[in-house]
Amino acid sequence: MNGLTCRAAVDRDLPRMKALWQLCFGDEAAEIDRLLSHLYAPGVGLVLEAEGQVQSMLLSLPLTLVGQGGEALPARYVYAFCTHPAAQGRGYGRTLLAWAEGQAAAQGCATVAMVPGEASLFAFYEGLGYARAFPRQTRKGVPAAAPDAVIAPVTPEEYGARREALLAGSAHCRYPLPFLEAQQALSLASGGGLYTVTVGNTLYLAAAEGGAGDTLVLRELLGPAEAAPAAASALCAALGRGQWLFHAPGQGKPYGVVKWLSGTRVDECYLGLSLE
Image (cartoon, rainbow, N blue to C red; front, side):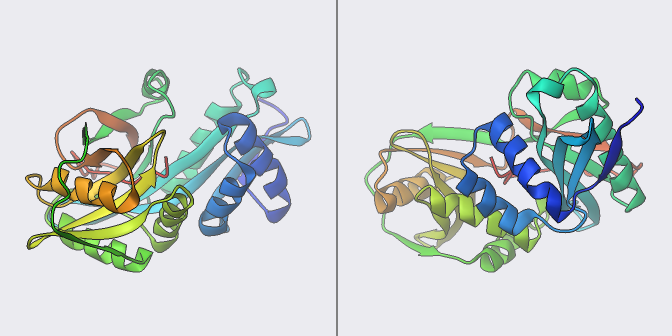
């Protein structure tokens, strides 16, 4: 396609990128600003320009895939990928995504990953060479009698360190600090936060968000499965919610997609946080 330019975003592109983000995903301007304040950096924002205007955008966020033996593979997580509705159907998004994959490969990344915004998009990405990945278990329920538990907020730095300790020996994604800061911003804005929950002698780690209605959504709840509902119930009691839904490592439906750019892979990897 002639007249198209794929390039790294610069500061002057930010107003158009924010407008595209809001138009395509419906997020409030304040939330977009909060996320970009943590996530945007040189080389992270990628855009396709056509007809004298940015028509498609994405954020290519760094993360690391960690294997069971501790091997670390650099990767990119594609976020906020969208094309202006009036420009859809022209291949702009496909072109930008292919360019982003090439940039990631040139930077030595092993893979590009993302979480489709809706179930129908899995087939679309599979047609572009992606495979379904990142299984997780999802459980929901109403709080039982609140157990004796100690709940404490943690900083993004502490969350990351404790997260790595809890996931050691398993295949998982490791996040850089700006990603965890963005998750904290989402959590706090919805009435939640990043927490440790100690039930008896068992420690859990939770990224909590206030969901629709009376639901407390734990974007991930890490710790032994046996007492996980008790930890979720304790958080519900502390945050004044009437039901819980949590995601955790385990067998379940893949909720993301991945394209491998090299022969080295990490299979059955747990993603966890995806800035949903």
